[in-house]
Amino acid sequence: MDRNDIPFLTVAELGRLIRGRDVSPVEATEAYLDRIDDLDFKFNAYLTVCRREALQAAREAEREIAAGEYRGPMHGIPVGIKDQIWTRGTRTTGGSRLFRDFVPEEDATVVANLKGAGAVILGKTNMTELAVSPYTHRYSLPHNPWNLDALAGGSSSGSGAGTGAFLCATSLGEDTGGSIRRPASWCGIVGLRPSWGRVSRHGVMRGVWSMDQVGPMSRTVEDCAITLGAIAGYDPRDPYTWDAPVPDYTAALDGDVRGLKVGVISEIMTSHWLDPEVRDVVVKATAVLGELGATVEDVSIPLVAHANTIAGTALSAETALDQGNMIRDRLDEYGHDNTIMLLTASLIPAQAYYKAQKLRELLRRQVHDTLERYDVLVFPTSGRTAPERLEDDRTIDSKETAARIPFMFNNTANLASVPGISVPCGLSPANMPVGLQVVGKPFSEETVFKVGHAYEQATDWHTMRPPNA
Image (cartoon, rainbow, N blue to C red; front, side, top):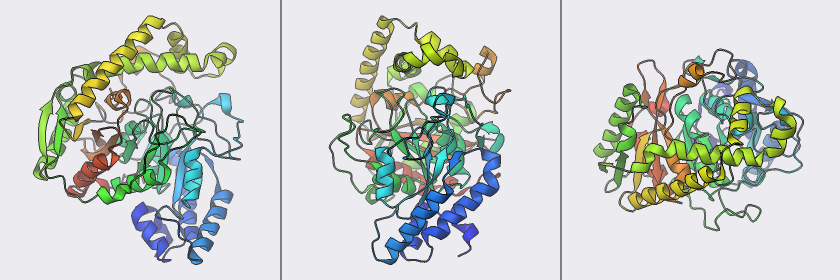
């Protein structure tokens, strides 16, 4: 096939062609590297491109496959890695000037797992500073492939823009308070925050120990499931991973949701933070699930209305504590809004953090109790579609600019430690993507994938290409 067409294949399609030796890993890797060279000036998706290492890995994958040593559906697949995740011998900045010269001596477990599955690492994707701010970028600002004047979303902004613009077949992000699902929604791709403990965080620059989670960002639910299968599993170097079997997530993608119960969270659907245009798109999406045979009902989870306040208090306090030495010694190297946030968070009293943790537990119980009666919960990923970028492209330096940032509905999943996926479900009148979020029980990624895939296959949103890609 024409090499220029390779980047537009899904992981599943490309994997089948590589396995059948109709496309070689070298051809696929060169096609993506050429596309990065030609187009990434528009998107700023990558901070580091590993051309030499990627081609070497691709040649090795080609040799293995020719020798009959096929490793599985990720063998030879070109992948982007968020720059928060360690890669041995390759600069890993965390999007911060504080770590501009840091070169890890080992791979993060998720990177080692990908390499073990035969994947090819194309490079390190852009991100907001230390994954703390969802918007401040200290090197270059990623641009949204649907509108180059719009934000790609943070903190996994480069993975969102790069995957959406066909600059990698799939990618890894990290999600503490929505950092996978926000850019997935805004860039029109699929992004999964797995259950807390499903994926190792060894070798991942820490934000908040009790909520950080690495996950896949892909163009389809099936690709997301394939990527998760390659990185998930117990890791003795991360004591918070669960020693539980990793299923074949793709086996659940049968398109059949008949008999499943879907709860639509009313506190989110009636929120004044939700743009009516986004609400209308999501209402239509939930109706599709009903047409497919699922039982769709409104549910009430009262504390969800306060999820962002609870999470904001816990996240900022933990981050300020974890970065205390750098705040004291290197404060001038942070971006403006992170400087303000970290200084303010350093003043949060212990009783406020303690109350936030008590409220988190109450919310977790409400979510888990509701999930005893429903297979999944659904709601919008973002209150609005991607906003246009800020005036100086880098910082939130006033109440006026802060007011332009859309309200996100992601903290329900991370506070409850449950999996949540964002799936494209439509376009706004301005032709910007809208994401439908599907949340399930702990370690029920199979069900979350099942519902997301059934919706995806019943609609055409996942087939649409951004105008700038």
